[in-house]
Image 1 (cartoon, rainbow, N blue to C red):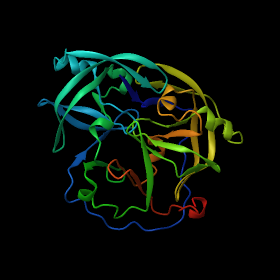
Image 2 (image 1 turned 60 degrees about the vertical axis):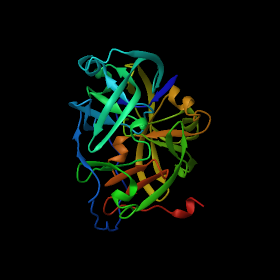
Image 3 (image 1 turned 90 degrees about the vertical axis):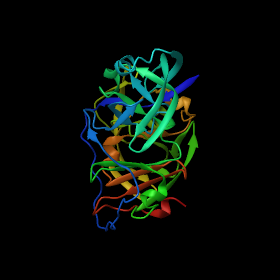
Image 4 (image 1 turned 180 degrees about the horizontal axis):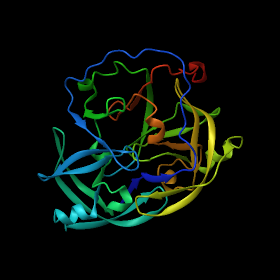
Length: 312
């Protein structure tokens, strides 16, 4: 069995990009039917939510839309005496390693409860000292809403979150290995597949994309460490413009690396990238809807909406 976890801790030597500015308005919106879960910002600027397991906890779990399977920190698994374990291969951002797994029963996230047959057991130090990671196996058929402006996460069906009302841009995605991959994207004029990864601190791309972005401004190298604790060094370049349908982000920093996770998703042959939290936080809200295969963006006030003609 193979699991995919793209989450990484990224130490970059470049400043965070800033969006291009102009006008428009954000409509009023209310979240009346959803379970709103307060979250805190942990040391890698990713998101954690309170989770209980078998009535124990709460534990701080990252919400990672780039990880195929849920992860539990080894100290938490030991604390809960989860010693009935199997072994699988975990494909991470920088490595492939054999890891232990264990079943999790009665996992509670807000008002939702579910069981997981196989959660990977990893060292807490390798996942930002969080207690675990909620992966795609915990999020299927749900919409996950990251409201950066109001500092909360909502996990519910799309109709409970008001459907698409209030979002400026709705982007279609396709499913591969349970991941939602946005294809209607361009970076400096190059067609690129984009994985929205709330477990990655910053953005990284494959070598196929690096070869196409020869004119992108080079900066110093960056070091990335994955959830297996394996580090690699990659060249970082500044792309002028990333467009996700009509959303535009200027001066985006991308670190390029030979990540096995791209091959595991079948994204190693053509330009592809992972869009991390440094860039996602530029939006007011981002929603990943796994049931309808849509990614929704709520633009900041005074943000440029790109030329739709670039996406015929």
